[in-house]
Length: 342
Image (cartoon, rainbow, N blue to C red; front, side):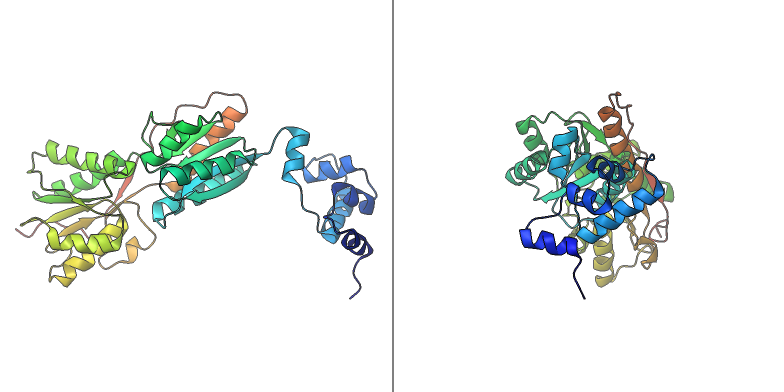
């Protein structure tokens, strides 16, 4: 196969193709190439086809740095995500990425360990890319401290952080979600209900525990010791061995914890929900297919992502972002909860 002449010439000079190279091959000006790349409607279809064919022939890739210098706009939004394999984090990240693209921006994503130094490094990397705004998935105070330290002067929204900590906090009302699960168990007749929480230093774990505590207090139930979990099925499985005597229902901080707890109860000869009812939080895709199906609290990650990006886009356009109330969580009742036998 004979290599196209344009590619042979560029290979000989050992450089990447430029916008001017595309213009010469297509027989147009570099301004016309720029208009094609920017999606201008004024370009004639046959001209657009010639430019796109030249781009394909040359393997031209747009230079973000050059575009930023020329327009003072990178059209990119940075996203800092925790480097943890959790359903909530992954779902939040995917939802935000999709919303950024739908808004006509490019997401630039980096993941960092949930610790101060790693968060600083991740944020500095994103800021060096000339991003116009920033989404931070901030489950822990180490991340919010890094943001405060860097004094970031960009439109910023935070997911998983409480209100008033950094930027504009957007997300589901975790406290009311756990309250819904607990009140569901109370309505079924349960009086000894225990909570397996997330790690105590995570914002969401604190909020979900607060919802549980409020529901227990309002129902005048005896408060039982909180079992601190770690968001994993392994932690939930271990929790099954240390439940308080006489417990008939358990509110878990997330679905993975609930899955592990259910397996631990079964291994100990207890049946769900005949002996112990179990609830989770998140409504992972597998939740309906467990046996029994898991009663859980659903949060709409897509809606959260759209709300976060909409707030940023409004601010980038010079408008004040509308106040966003915490999105309401939804209780999804399945077969893992039932009235107590006694």
